[in-house]
Length: 532
Image (cartoon, rainbow, N blue to C red; front, side):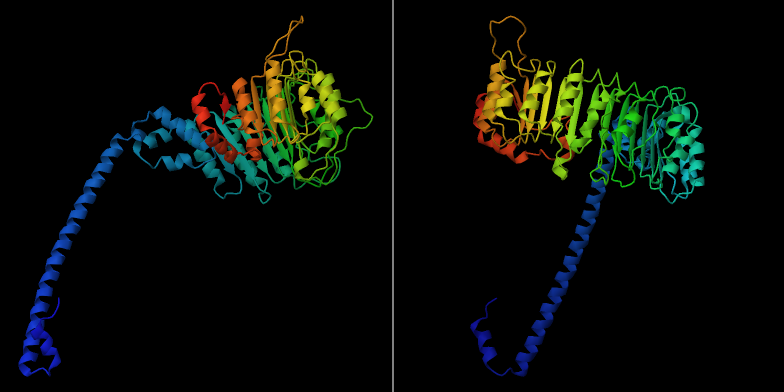
């Protein structure tokens, strides 16, 4: 507030006693006014606090009412049980305990035996017996999915106790997973599994085999075959075996139909064709076989030189080999008359030498009768002559997948026209193919749509083309392909190995393609069959 002229004059002169007294009187008046105002403010703040408290009570009441009518409370118990089961299947082993503390409805659903059907037994835990007994009691008569984990620290007595409890429910086992550091621990667990397991479908064994010694493999877990033969586990079909060493004796149940064999990093035992054939030749009912070599393996793969020995797998439908390219020398030693799907994946991009596989692949393809329907070559390259020979020997091939291949335009032209090679080919997927031009793919699709007047059957039209990260395939080529057939520039939803490695992520390219041609997509909606 500005001072008046009279007040300004007072500040220029020495204050008299009357002025001093008047000033103190004025100060006391203002202090009294301030005190009154502070009191009024405090009353208002108390009122605001009371209003905030009342507001919070109303909001809490609203939340309780919403909780009464929320969808989570109105879900049927069967659906809640299904959700809880998915939580457990995804690895959240404590889900039954956690969800049972949410509300009465969830607690009731969580008490369903199916929710407790995944039994996780860690032999290192001090209270493993009590926990296992509690979990089995909750599971009741439900089918069980059992996982047993034992580190190298565990004494054998710490394994047999929980296994005796689990063995009492062998008739309820649907799947069994064994994870150990020591091979002898795996054998102890598998030995306790002797007896009838009429409902067992899947078996997963993972062991680091730290206790194996150099030699003839006397530590192979012999009870893997003895405890799970057809008399004990008649419905066992799928077996996964992951270890630092490959067994040299036939240890797998002879009646399994699906085998995943993975050898991890090791320096303990050489890997040879003879050892693999020795393991596989006792599995005549195999339908699916997946074999992986490690990223680091001290010993080179030992091929079978000058031998016609072969493992006969008459029912094998799908074969996957993943390792250095010389692993494919195993192919001539496999007799697979029913094979339809062949997946060959190399570790070339991880530093391995590229071993020519043309001769072994050609012999294998010629021996397949009836011929293959799907061929995948992942980071495996062939020369033009081998490509031509393989295409000529695959009249029933339906799908071709090439990853990081140097396939040329001239090789693709062998498939072109109504009389081209691989007449039943309908799907082709090329990724990181740096020598292939987009116009060659466009010409291939266009030529397979044409017909001629010659007698005999003509080639099937191409139903789908996948193109990812091929430097000479332009956006115009992609659009031309999409006008004639389905063109995919993204990985497949299912059965796509690149989804696990992340090597074919092209989000920026797909976004740029969508933005550059947005008007064309709108104008030709329904005519462009482009999968982005």
